[in-house]
Length: 195
Image (tube, rainbow, N blue to C red; front, side, top):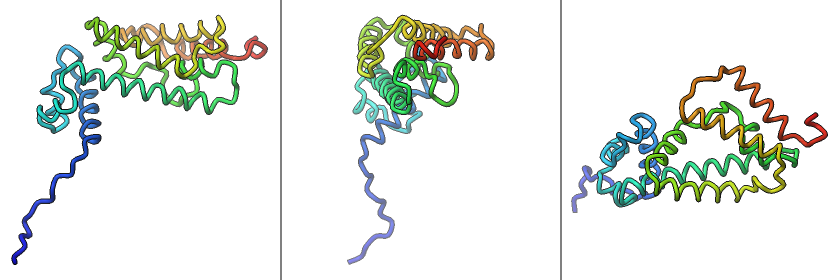
């Protein structure tokens, strides 16, 4: 019996890896080309997957965008919960986590979120579904537990800055942005420390 040395190994079926590759490719295409030029063909090509392979995991463009949004919300939730867990001061820690005050790096809204929100603005169905999911995530991390007017104001200020990032309003210089984050940080401190 002769064994062929030219046999190729069987392809290992790793659907989670393929799905993650597709979501990564979708994110890159969305950020690079914008929502108007976002197509399943481009995503499949970028992920080096056939269009049929893409459709196996995500039957349409909405399902792919939903998958990308849900993954980003899972990451957002994980970052908030990690920040809450690592914050030794109980008062205001959910608000500080939401604002991103305990995270290393930039305070700007991630580019992928900007583009996903742009998709929401042009698709009312996405908007309605994603807003419900967003608030479900926010409630699940306890943001509104023990909310005070000062904590709410800090969160709303962070949302305003995020909106400016999404709209690419290049209005604030870095010093002003840092001053605003300092004010938000003060609003999240226990009342005796905030003064």
